[in-house]
Image 1: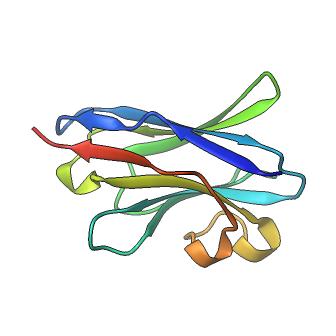
Image 2: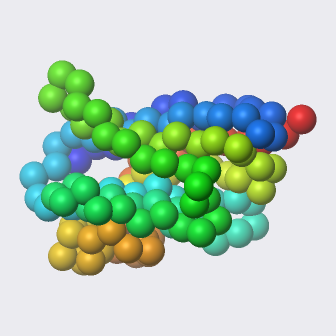
Length: 129
């Protein structure tokens, strides 16, 4: 059974940094993993994706140069991390990690929510003074 568990959200001042983590387990197929975010009153936005097979990545223009992704394996559990630097008030949103099969997502490209089957519970990130 695929499970994604997120952690690391919170309140941060503009210009600050946060690191989100997504613990992934139970995946038995080739997949792409992505981070999405949804601000109040806005559509869910895909901001970053990584093809787990070859490591290629896509980063949205809205976060390029500020957000980076990394992967760690600890005790056989994959952690998909999102390091967020130079945060802005407009980065305020609920952040989700998600997994979709590689054949449907097309690998690391601009992620579309409909192509992702498994989702974390979401974690709130608030950028404010």
